[in-house]
Image (cartoon, rainbow, N blue to C red):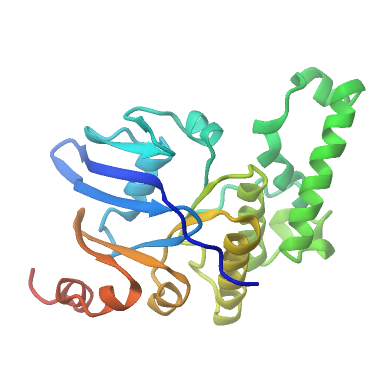
Length: 261
């Protein structure tokens, strides 16, 4: 399948500064994300990458700056509001329900789209039963897409780490996001698992048309799958451009090689 056409700016980060007490986590960060692209955020440990994602999805409230999503600017949004707007997030540390099956974990991502009240949902009667059947059909499509059909009924805690990460991705996809924020989706994976996850990320981008913003430490992965890369170091932006442009950027080279700032 031909790669999706990259569109106009869908997410615009404007002059974001975030402080914790006297510590500057982010200083005057600006970058944009275009529709259908894979946009990577990279940088050494402590660069502010996760803090940046936390600002975008409403976990942190920056002291300065604003974020625009589809032309709508917001300064203070909570995570639920951001999710309802169409931005989903996976986390570095898996926040899955380990005792629940794969299908039930992914179903939790459908909560935003459920209209029947929780009592009817629990009893699975009337409109709630029909609604759940429709949501389960959607979730089964995700399970097929992620090639985890054999584990549908397996408690997530019994799965290998790489498959748990796939379930985490599935739960985020169940929200039908327009923008998907991936926080180190390949951390702790072996080479084969990374290759699988890279393929699924590109497939999500191609087939679902989802815009991807990801934090990743494996530079070979970033350079392979990203359309553009923004580089943070000590909470400041030091590079932004195509993988080739970033690879040749002297500030980026020195940050990664540890030469003096």
